[in-house]
Image (cartoon, rainbow, N blue to C red):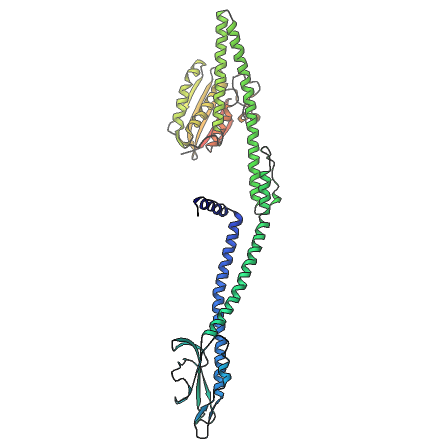
Length: 466
């Protein structure tokens, strides 16, 4: 057999072993063959017991015929003329040899073979060995009229096992043929049943295959059996999530393009103005505006990248150990120059390390956006306080400011991408809180907005402790 043929045969066996139809058929046939094997084992011993019973009944009948032929003559001698029928009843065509023995109660041999083995119990057949061959032996005591004190004679008949074994074999083979037919019929019924039973699953497969790449409407659960309906419902739920995700991506791309279009057009205009402006002061003013717009679009691109990385499944999960107290201190130090320029009071309340596990880079981005939002939307001479601590087994980060706050009716909407409150003068893209929520939920935490005492906003983030 060539190696290519062996490879193809192995591939075919591997493919069949993964088939649900083949697996179910194998398990059904394995159970059926196990039951039939036990039944054949039991039927063998039943056939053996039946063959022994028939042989014993024949031996008993032969012994009675011989015993009834025993007589006592006028001289008191015991004589017997063995009827041919007593021996011919074993002539079944299997070449059995029949032996017999007739002895008196006092041990005198009347007829037959003197060395014939005797069974231990009367009227019950036993297997013995006689002249190197296995025989079935049965003994019968029978009273004879004319003997003193109602004496008896013992008749022993033995026959070889040929007929007995042939009968056992025929009985067992008859049962085996019935079992074989039963297995064959059961296999056909099982194959037909599997074909009909798996038909709904195959229809489900075809329905999924025939759908177009953009078709995500739900499948009807009634097309399959009740056991498979949870699978169809899971597929429908998955397609709904995919559909929602695709819609969110389309909105994200559309909003991102809209947000990038305006600053890019502004940069182009400012560059054109600076290029044709002859006055140095006005040219410097245009270049300053150009640098400002460049910073804005750079921050927008950075936030878009951060938001994309924060989405579930966008990157391999990481399990870094992050000290939120240390990270908050470093971020506040980075914003200190801008806070001094705008006379904003930055405060940190963190008296001990607070350790959490998660993506360290994204957790720092979450803190950056919280602090940057507070500084960006607060006016000059404002106050921003960051507190890091623990409560009820969770890490708690609060960012409190005394700015304009957020109306309660819009606190859920501000977590949406590109959403901005009407009338807000501060520059921003509307992505800061969306990034915060994505990062926090990805780390298994929660974020909430509340009013600060005396006016302003408190953002509270809760994360699982390491």
